Length: 93
Image (cartoon, rainbow, N blue to C red; front, top):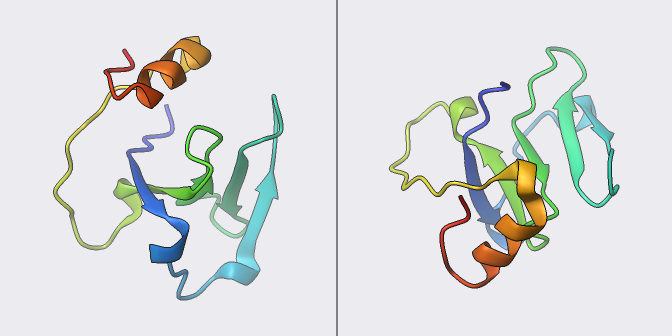
């Protein structure tokens, strides 16, 4: 519903060039994932997912330049099963 197209970027390869002072953080459910959004416009351009604790999930729809992507499905409704499939290297749908 939010139009989030995830690109996993390892923490050491991610640089936020500006706007960190405008970010607001929130957590829900298990409290593991850290969701960040712009306190001015409300856009959620990246966040720390619980599925990938060593990477940021960047919203490809928020990038100025398009990037080549391969789409991997993740069944968020059945999160535990989807995460196990991801860890095994298989499809998560």
